[in-house]
Image (cartoon, rainbow, N blue to C red; front, side):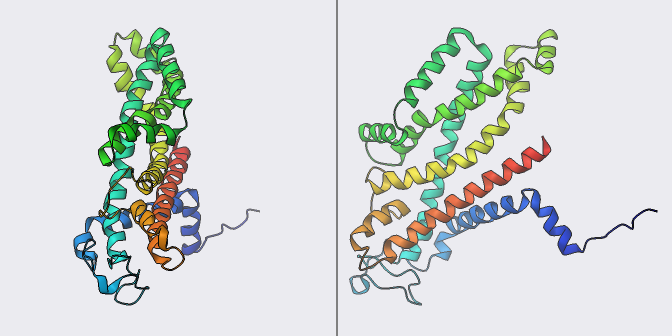
Length: 285
């Protein structure tokens, strides 16, 4: 005697379908897209000019007119947070792209060629990893001078090692697989084998790591701006805003709190997005 089939209600089926990583993916995507839309439409969304100073409104607590309050120069905190999203998203994205491209190319070529070239690349990676990440990045920025260009260069020179190690490990495994050996037997060029067959299969883990690395880049960008080596005042940037408000933390807590919460929420969005993509790719592999 067969048991009758059970039909789940539609809302239960929706919850069941969201349990395979989609909910995490959608939440992270919603947070990142939300900040992206705020940054894109900042001129129309921000209620005030982020650089406009008003001595009569100095250190004003949150009100209906100024929901996030004002700083020690009378500038609206909400407007500066919205405009600061442009700089911080730019730092998170560009600060990941260059290390990803540089590290992926070096790691893929090193793993595919092997031999002395691979040994030299690995020793270079060991030298870079011997120094603390933030200390080495600050040293490079101190030499180049403060600014976003110095931050991007420092991130590229320091951050590529993680991608190189990750992609190299994938290439070492994939180049001994059946499809790679078949491509060699058919007389395909090394460039076609590496970039046409091995790289597409080795990039999944690097793409996931790239999304989670955006969290580290975002926090590093806020940290260097807090230390005075990143974005320079009066430009609206979350780390700079926290640094400007540290002297008023006991009397005007809102100056530091809202930019800090913005950093936390955007970092959480990138982290959830990375976890969701990792779960989805894991289910398909």
